Image 1: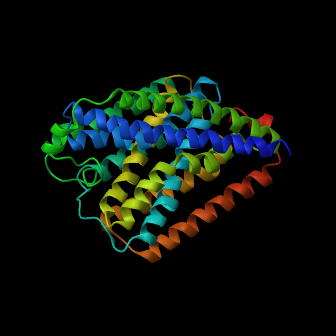
Image 2: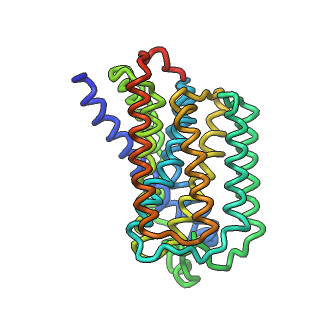
Image 3: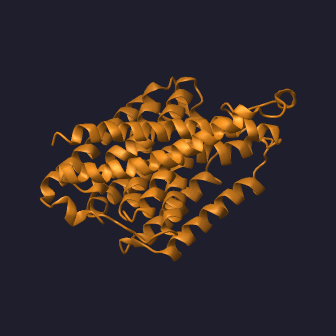
Length: 337
C-alpha cells in the first residue's frame, strides 16, 4: 500500500501535464487560427471545444495503444457524468443567473440525443469494434459539418462569447505568429501525448497495488482529473454571467466524448465495457443525460438544482466505491475489463 502514494502523486503530475498541455494547444492554436483568418466560430469549434477534450482523447488513445481496452469507455462515461453533475452543478451554484438565451434545440440538443443513442447502441454488447468506432467518428463528422455549413458564422453563439471573439482590427494587428507561439504549441502537444502515456501507466499500476479495476479508477479519478479544463471554463463562464457558454461547453464536450473519444481509440483496438461501467456507469450516464436534456430545453438552471447535481455526484462516487469494495476480485481478473 505504501507504493500507492508515489504512484498517486505521479498520476496527479501526469494529469497536470495533460491539462497544461491542452491549455497551451488551445491558446496557441487560437493565435495561429486568428492569423489564418479563421472565424471565431471555427476557432471555437475546432480549437477550443476539442482542445478542452484533448486530455480525454489523448488518454483514451494511449490506453488503446497499450491494449488496456476497458479504459476508454470507462473514461468517456465518467467524463460525461462528471461534466453534468460536478461541472454543471458547480456552474449552476456559482452563477448569479444561469439562463440560456441561445436556442440549442435545433442542433446541439438533437445531436446529443443522436450521439447518446449511437453510443448506447454500440456498447449494448459490451464491446466497440473497429466498424462501430468508424461509425461513431462519421456521426461526429456529420455533426461538425452541420455546425459549419448550416449555422450563420457571423451570428453570436455560445462559443463566440468567450475569449475567441476578435474584431477585424485585432486580427490585422496580430501579425504573423512569433516563433514562440509555434514552440509552445508544439510543447503543448508533447505534454498531452506524454502525459497521456504516463497517466495510463500510473492508473494501471495503481489499480494493481490497490487491487481494484483500472476501469473504476478511470470512471472516477481519471475522469475528474481530465475534466478540469471543462470545469475551469464552465465555472468561470458561469461566474461572469455567460451561462450559455458554460452549458455549451458541457453539451459540446459530452457529445465529443461519446463519439470522438470512444470512436477514435476503437479504430486502434476493439474496446470493452468493464463490469463497473456496465452496472453503474451506463445507468448513471443515461440518467445524467436525461437531466442535461431537460435543463437544456428548459434553458434555465437554479442554484438548488446545482446543489442537487453536486449531491448526485457524491452519491455516484459512493456507488463506485461500494461496488469496488464489494466486488471481491483481484485487479488481474478485471485488468482487461
